[in-house]
Length: 251
Image 1 (tube, one colour):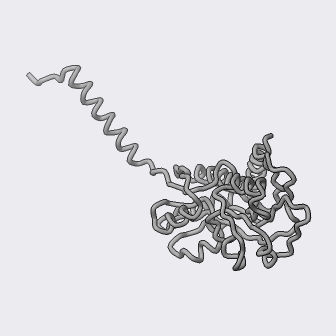
Image 2 (cartoon, helix red, strand yellow; image 1 turned 120 degrees about the vertical axis):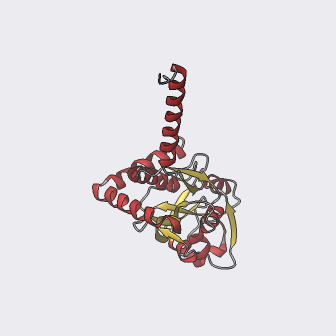
Image 3 (tube, helix red, strand yellow; image 1 turned 90 degrees about the vertical axis):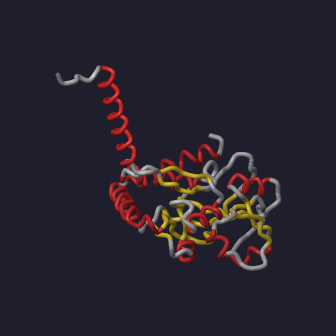
């Protein structure tokens, strides 16, 4: 007479098959990409880029997560393959690191602006900066390359620290990267702050990945172009920017 499997045996086999099915499904899921980002809690420009990236990656079905790193270290670790991507970079970084690949369509247009609390301070261009103590964010390659020699430079690890340097009169001028066309920032606790009229530089920033992710970069570019064509990209930028500026001012 053929042996009939016991109920316990059938349940055990079913459990094993379910576990194997779960494991196979888990293995089929793409692993989250590690995107190095910086100054995430205080910098509106970073916040806008991250919001756009969240939308793009969801569009292509690729899990991702942001990893907090200082800007300079984030760039070094992308170049060495220790992380998969950086939130955004300007052309200077791309030219210096041919092993990385940029999403062809820019994440945004960025302007370098000068802020001060000195109502008498005037600035005609980069050549005037050596006259003052100038604060800037550490690891922003574009700013570092454009600054003239012989400057009194003060590096800040975050935008909050940059505003604190102005508020405490440890710096006379702060160079800030902003989304082109954005209103002047009004951080809480910095009295008398003004943004000078001059635009020191204007450039695009691109989402940047390690060279091994070239195929993904093309998919992300297609997603970004779709967002751009539908008008969602600009709407997302502006809504995110307004929310971050309001929070920054204590609103």
